[in-house]
Figure 1 (cartoon, rainbow over the protein chains, first blue to last red):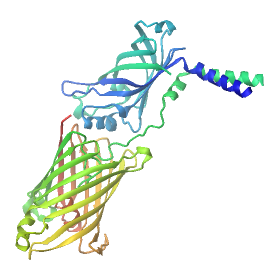
Figure 2: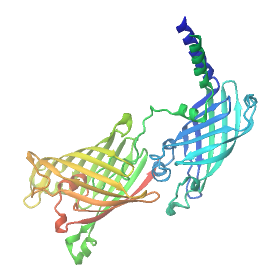
Figure 3: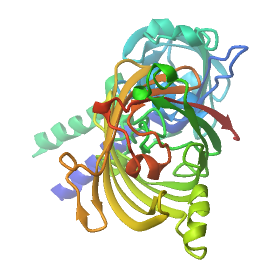
Figure 4: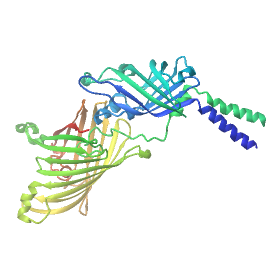
Length: 180
Length: 297
């Protein structure tokens, strides 16, 4: 009986703990640093994201090495010379959706603002991002588009290729979260 | 007992509210392999093949240039008047398989080779990357020499098999060893005689990155065995081993390799087994490789 109660309680607790979280491990983030001289628009389709619908806490994480470029050499340079993926393998965002309430999950499109810290290339920076949240019965869709400046994150562009790479990078986020 | 249950209940329920750090730890997936990339900047260390290979559906066109020896004197501008080249067409069939066709002007040798990556460093925590590199040589000059000796022989064909074992020790330092087996006919051009040679050599090379665009490379390739003769890599008088040192300079889309070596020949068989110049006598050649990648994606 005691054991039964214990197991029941454990299950209940785990169930209670998981139902408020929505998660994805294959979201996509694309960044665009194209210039007239060079097209640079790699996409990462293995972005992890978790949203706690109880309090609006949201976290993103991706591996820099999962960004796929059209040119393999460009991909190697990106990882080796610019973002130094061996020293700083991951980029993260840890934040909160502002004015969170469960009405945002009513199935309509809502404009939201996320505030938090973004870490790229080992440099942490506070950021405020506009986004869109939309739900259906099982999924939560998130999308956002914002600009970041490479110099803010200590990513240096050598003089020789300065005209080929944009100094500000447009980041496009698309997530499809499922209940955990 | 009840107290314990209440405590446990609270304990488990407390998991239901998560901080951002807890959320982040939820996303960590430790089972993923972190495959090593960019062990070397180029498909060659200097003369020796590195474990890097041309990417899938890309053609890497390389021109290797070798000037003359430093000890050729001022009338040849210390070797800079003399030049020979090797054209290399290297195509990546898949991520792990590439094929190469090359021709060296000074040796008059055409060679075809096949590189196959068997294991990548980081895959299930492997400490090394292992590749196989096989090549076949067709000596166009030997056809003329051997025509007198024997028409039916295949003495103009050589074969080489290398196993490339490399490790990226940290982001700056990479090392490689390559056991090399070669079968070829050694040709004596004076009396047109020759002997079949089965040989073992050990290529050793490495690179050290001094900044994000420049690395220093070096390699030494002692021949250890010719047929049944065991050769001491340092004390022997008959075999001259290849030693090279150089730099890789990476610009936007190219890698320039500038180096000095005592090997005048550029085919894989040539620089391992057919050296006639020694560093301490000034038999040093300046050379460079330039490459251009064509993308067929």
